[in-house]
Image 1 (cartoon, rainbow, N blue to C red):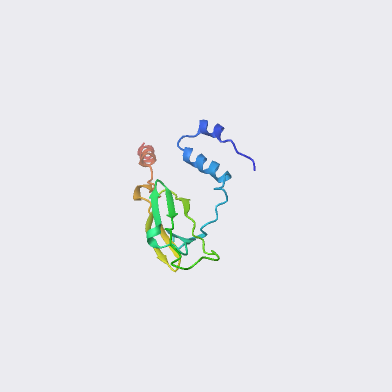
Image 2: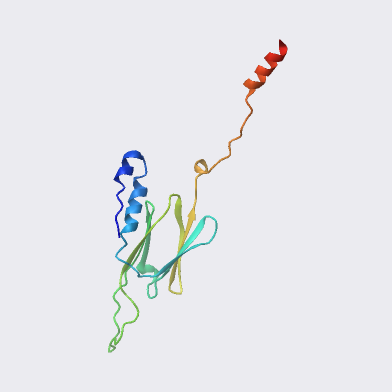
Length: 155
């Protein structure tokens, strides 16, 4: 894969450093991290949901943190004994710790999270402040042109 050099763009743009950093990070995957599997779905015009398969984890073993446009979900299993006199012959249920990070867009905040049937649901909502929303600007007719016409007809 080729690496794109954004340094010429840094000289002619102001305030786009974060964008170029994100583009650089797209070229370098997270070491092909695939655990735990997840879905991202749009549930409304400004609402989203991340669903993660975290079978075997309880809500006390999962932590969710949102900080500066990064959502971090961590899971760490506590060691469980197999019990007196029992021996584990095959481990097919993953019990490894995980940490998954999601880049959030500006003005996206976490609304809530729930754990049901081995699936962790994280609900997100985009709240754009009123001052940043597009607004319609009314166009008014220039009265200077009307005054010139009146002045010409008065002569």
